[in-house]
Image 1 (cartoon, rainbow, N blue to C red):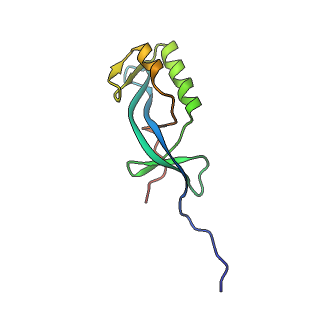
Image 2: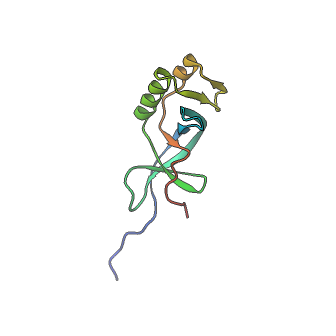
Image 3: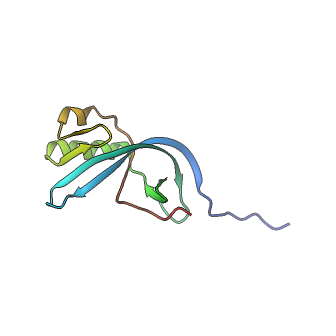
Length: 116
């Protein structure tokens, strides 16, 4: 009998509800912070990559923490970024943005490896 070897399968940790976020700059160069959607995904590690990932639209995306979401929200409100939530249906409403639940998130533009 041969020794067992590891494989490249994704190791599952847990399932989590998270935000899909847009960040960066718009066409006019203004910083933006937008919540596109709420999704639930399995959080995993990938061989050869550090950190945690979730599968979304045929790619793995790096998972960002609740603490990072809190910081991005604070900055967006205090520095007058263009902020909005398509999921909640509002734009530039400080009270509504403050009332949104903190959650881990992925950046929509931050695609990781292709999910095979």
